[in-house]
Length: 495
Ligand SMILES: Nc1ncnc2c1ncn2[C@@H]1O[C@H](COP(=O)(O)OP(=O)(O)OP(=O)(O)O)[C@@H](O)[C@H]1O
Ligand SMILES: [Mg+2]
Image (cartoon, rainbow, N blue to C red; front, top):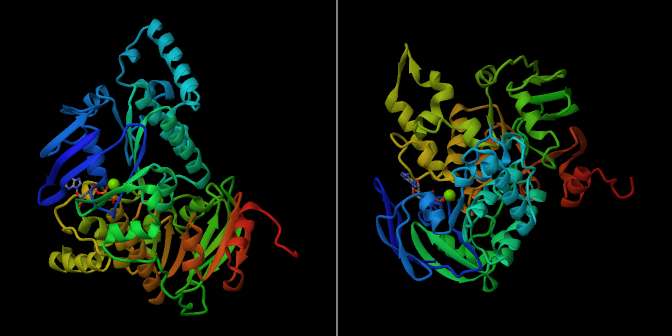
C-alpha cells in the first residue's frame, strides 16, 4: 500500500499533513507517536472509515477510493479498532461473519459458515469457541473475534490500533504470537502502539507521527526506545519518576479491614495515610479492580469494614462516596468514566457541580476558568468547552478523568491502570500530577499492572493474589522481585 500526500482536518484541527508512506506487503509496520499525533486517524483512513481531504491511496500500484470500511475490506483492508467493534449479544461465529454474505440465513449457509470457520481456525492456528456469546469473553478473545472477522473477509492488510492497551501481560503475548503468525502467512499488519518495546520487538518498520506530520519511517532494527522517543517528542526524554514524598499525617484516610466480596476478594486489610501513594499490585484478575469498586460504593461488600478518616464508611453508591471526597478513575474509561458526547468542562465538573453553584445558579465563568486551569496543568491542549470528549485522543480522555478529581479536591483517589494507552509525555505528566496530589495530602490507591509504576511511584504496595492480600511491601522491601514473588504466591527467600 502506498499513501501519497494525505491530508485530513477536522473543524480547526489539522490532524494529518502531507503524509507519504509506503507499506510493504508481508511486514509488520509500527505506527507510533504522542497522543493526538494522528495515528488513529491515519488508521481509519487506511481502513476506509474516514475519507482523507486530499491525497491518494494505492494498493498494488493502483489508485483506490475506499468509501467505507466494507469497501476497504473488498480491497483487502481490515481494521481492529482502538475501541472494539464486536456485538456483545451475538455469538462468536455470527460476529465473525457479520455483514458477510455467508451470514444471510438458511441452514445451508449455516453449514458453510461453520466449515469456513473451521478453515480459518485451521489456517491461522487460533480460534474462539464458535457458539459462545461474545460479551462473555475476555478482552483478548474478543479481539481474536475481530481479527478473525477481518480474516474471514480475506483482508491482506490489517490495522491494529493499540491492541494491547487493555490486555494483561499473558494475553498480550498471545496476541503477539497471532500477529507474527499472520505475517508468516503473508499478511501485512499496521500496528499502532504506545509500548515502544513491543513495537521494536515485532515490527519490521516503524513510522513516527508528530502533530500530524510524518517524521520518519525506518527499519525497526536500527531503532531503540530512546531514538524513537526523540523522534516522537522532538527532544530527549527519559521516563523519570518524581521524587517520592512522605505521608503528611499519621491518621489513615482509608482503613480497610477484613473486606470480602466473594469470589472477587476476601479478607483484605490495609490502610492509606494522607499524602501516601499505596500501590495495589498483582496479576490481572487478582481482585484489585473489584476491591476498588467496593470501596467506592459501586459494588457491595459482604463482610468486613471500611473506615474513612476514622469513621465507618457507609456508602451505598458512588454518589455517596463522591460527596465524602472519594474519587475513582476506572480502568475502562469509555464504559465507566466519561460522558462521551459532553465536553471537557462538563466531564470534569459534572460530579461536583455544587461547588460552582450559588443560590441555584451555576457560576459559568468560574467553572470554565477552573477547568481551564486544570486542563493546562495536565497539558490537554484542546478547547474545554464545545468539543465532545468522544473526539479527543485516548490519552487526553484519560487526563480528563484525572482532572475531574483534581478539581474535586478528593481526599481519597482510587485509580485503576492510569497510564494505559497513554504516551510517554502524558505518562510523565500523570506521574508528576499524582505526586503533586499526594503532596497536597490526598491519599492515593494506585491499581497498576506496570511494575515500573508500582516501584517508581508508590510509598508502599499491597500485592494481591487470587482475591487475597498476598503481601504488603514497605518502602524498604519494595522491589521488582518481591512484588513478582508475592503476585505469583512464591515464598520469599529465607522465609
Ligand atoms: N472526528 C473528529 N473530530 C474532531 N477532531 C478529531 C476527530 N478525530 C480526531 N480528531 C483530532 O485529531 C487529532 C488526532 O487524533 P488521533 O485520534 O488520530 O490521535 P492518536 O495519535 O490516535 O492519539 P492517541 O494515542 O491518544 O490515541 C487529535 O487532536 C484529535 O482530537
Ligand atoms: Mg489513537
